[in-house]
Image (cartoon, rainbow, N blue to C red):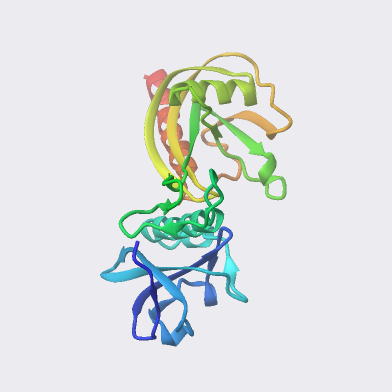
Length: 263
């Protein structure tokens, strides 16, 4: 897309990104005049629009206030998606300066998100890693696990994992659940998706029902896993995540099960 050198009169939202981090002075995404934020002379690319104003990407590291884009998620889902786009594009351009086939310095396309090699004519696009995440119900209980990545935080969530080459999303769901928990599931159905820029994932959410097996966790992925009654849940993810939606959807199914059993 078209890049320009800022002269100071430009205004809008400023996504300054580097190595998966986002510039958040005073904890917020900068909004206003380029000169106000000392951005004159920097190279910026328009990557979208938010609330009627241009969203600019500056792929550069600032000396301070670089933070995780996760901090934006609680503010607004749409703004978080744009932040994720900025973070991922900045990392894409940083990691694709040279052609992987011939080593030639590449240029950015002016018409699409791509890097172009004028020597061997290869064209590179930002890569997205498809991931599955699934809420699993067993009567009026839900399967929740504490992941290794949450070892410093007693957070419990649903199971997730990357899709492997040559498998469908449903196959990935069943495989990941079996590998991580030793549980066989059935009735796998799609719910929703969420872009997740950590570092460049697209989370695709599913619900499923327990079929058979006893929990045996993969110690490389999980600290623990268990069946939790819907009225006795541990600490779960915040409401701005697809994991929370899957948990809430599963809890609703658990309540319906109890109502049906009661009647």
